[in-house]
Image (cartoon, rainbow, N blue to C red; front, side, top):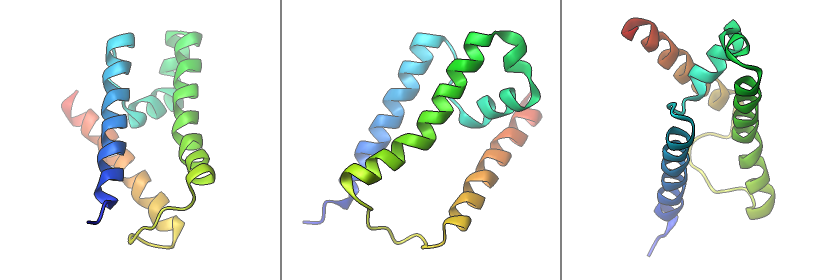
Amino acid sequence: MQSDWIWGLVGGAMIGTAAAAYLWLNGRIMGASGIIGGLADGSEQRASRASALENLAYLSSLALVPGLLWLVLGKPATHLTTRPLILIAAGLMVGAGTRRAQWYLA
């Protein structure tokens, strides 16, 4: 029996648990595009220095943990693409889209 779907299930559970913990502990919704936007436009720095440092730590962990897992577990087999620029562009477009949606909903 193929067990690749288990990694997706584990990853989804980890993201869901992290989002629930962030909401429970901070009273805010976890969202990388909103955090990046707040740091980019300076609203987070004006709110509080501790909040800005917390958000920088969160964003750093988003970037570093996959790399650490890659070193520990090895490169996962994927069928997406072998071109990292496509993945980076896709991630930036998702972030830009969610940020734009916030403007319409506000």
